[in-house]
Figure 1 (cartoon, rainbow, N blue to C red):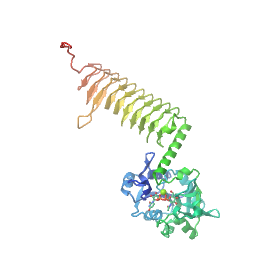
Figure 2: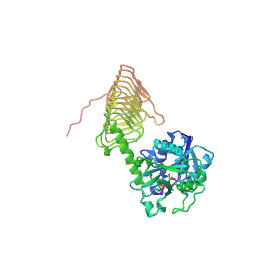
Figure 3: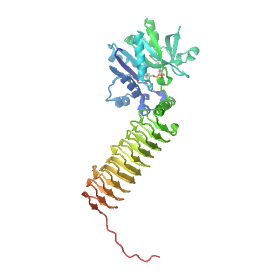
Length: 451
Ligand code: UD1
Ligand code: MG
């Protein structure tokens, strides 16, 4: 196949979203619409990805800065053809395929984009349009055929009653060859919206005597355009249902699949059971035979086999196998919990490594710490890690036993097999094998007579 460049149209205001945010920055499964489209094109390794920005350009540009895309600007939003025209300065002398994708069709698959480009070459066409047959075509441009062949695209507002009955629609995804620029220069604003329609290039290319083709997508959902919040929520439901189906097929149980949120990129192992109320956000992988019970929120974390998460919040953590979290635990960024660790109710862990078999079962805060193997941390233990300016480390050696209600004033180090008496405030290092008691002695005094 020839090389290609992608032009992604993202300048429209998205008035129907009724939002201060540009439409293409609205998120679907945690990822902005425009990024979905960019990702679908990027997989196929284009020579250039040109994003046309306009409404809310700064916000989109800032979000995409650092990615490998080029930006062009459409000062006034005069229509989709006018948007594509802005990319001419980058691609004027480009001889490969030009894939044009509306920035609001997030569910489009790379495999479909590939088929579209292959068709354009195979049939020697100047353009191949991706069409779809939909139950409710309202709002879309209709595919008008003559003798079975693509004749033109008629926009909703410009369609006559017969055209409005057509259920085959334009998806807003096209593969053009280099004739695009000549055709687009001929587009006029003679339509209901007084816009320059990209869809007019079809009829124009035909007038030039060029061949125009279409292919029809199999799954209607792929070309769902997002123009308002209803369509956004429908797309969210489609994505979630597809994901749940994929996971069910891989051997995961959902006790109530209607009552969970699972990000498109979640990886979950077989025989894991997900209970109602679970929210699995972006960047999560969960092993086999785990149990995740609601209400739990997990993001950007890895959880090993046979672990359980009950009613807990887990963010940015690496969790090994057979770990028990919760109920009601808070596992924060850069926490590493090794095999068989237990973190119980109302315990918070942050930037701490907790080695094999160690337990923090009740009401504790362990932050900026390194806890060895087989350590028991008593209820109410706190690492006092912050002096008002800097964070400091607490190190607790393996096989140590920490009684209840201990404060470790960091930086502080406890050796191997030490014992910390309950209620101690530890300000100095404790060597291996020692018992540290750092609390006021109990005194007994006579009590005034009780009345
Ligand atoms: C468009 C198509 C329609 C198709 C539908 C598929 C045209 C004229 N119509 O209609 O045939 O069925 O998509 O979803 O193209 N944009 C700009 N600058 C502008 C106008 C639009 O960048 O001046 C961008 C928008 O940000 C959006 C895309 O172009 O990503 C399409 O615009 P939109 O207004 O959503 O067009 P539709 O009415 O959906
Ligand atoms: Mg649209």
